[in-house]
Picture 1 (cartoon, rainbow, N blue to C red):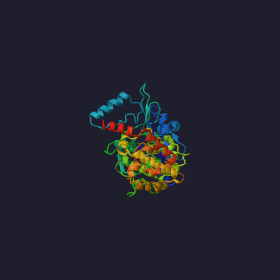
Picture 2: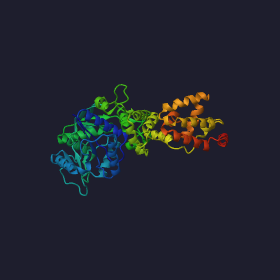
Picture 3: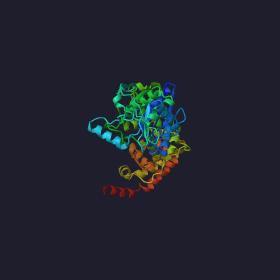
Picture 4: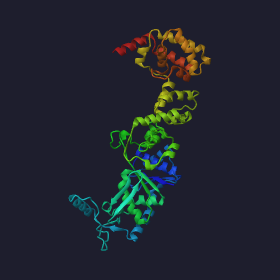
Length: 476
């Protein structure tokens, strides 16, 4: 049974790299019948943002990855950190360091001049003298002076850090505020973490946290350090490439299951399978199979996945999602037919809304190139005759197939080619030439509304003077 967590700092929005890490943690906990916990690491008061906290919680609500406990906030756990810092001081495993900023800077400059890695030299490690005046000390933990800090990483394999790579680092600042690597280790123990999945930018923090675990006598969890998500060129992902607020994906018309499906494949796979339901993810995911190399963001694949989910979720779900984009279909009597028609070509909910609007909205203008190409001197008479057919059979024209049954004989009788009739009708009904099947559009709009739009197009655009004007504009 794995107990995992996701622990973002609320200094900015939650981006997709963070969401992928959270997803992997969530899947591993749920697969093993364990617990997934959310912790907000908000000890940096100068950089914390309440808006960022809200955005993080909102993102987790949107994708449906709920924490199995009340969300923890580090800012509310200060007394716990103080307790453990004092314990280490009392046990001689930590000490007060009175080194001034000037002294620290001078030490670093000397080490850099000697081509040494900058590190604290331990000058106050066993200090017993009189503390210098005017300096508020920091608290440093005693790191091992020899040997190695080793662990088996679930992604990267055997990891080893020599004692010379970890100095006596600060665990509490001069104002008493605890530092990141100290509070993370304390929190992970108190929250009973068994497995810690995080980005591999945290890899060098792990030996420091192991020093804290060992000093406090805590069991060390299993670590999985996940490679980053790069852009298609193999460089660090930028906002332009997709590293934006998770909630921006909602605004762009993505479904949460599409985004999660996309992210689970960025660093993990199950053969050539591309489509994963949440149940399949839970059944198949194993963090030990996470790729060791970085993955590449692919917007085309995300769009393809989103289009797949739009086509396969229920129309009831789409109606609910479209409300966010001010598209209300709940009371529309042809909503099922309309959605079945429009979702086939939509890769985002925004595209779906646009396709719906293209049919439902009365055209305010007509495509000039389409008018010039498809509207001829005989077009108006042809449309007038076709409207007579529609009126005569109005009571029986409910489905696309019904409309097809009366339209094909009309085309044959008048010796027409399909575009000769369909494109003028498309232009009349939607204003353009790229709408779906005429049969479908008429069925959705109904015969009366369709006739009304054809008549309006004839009055506004399809008469002889309009054709002449349109032709002159195009020639110009």
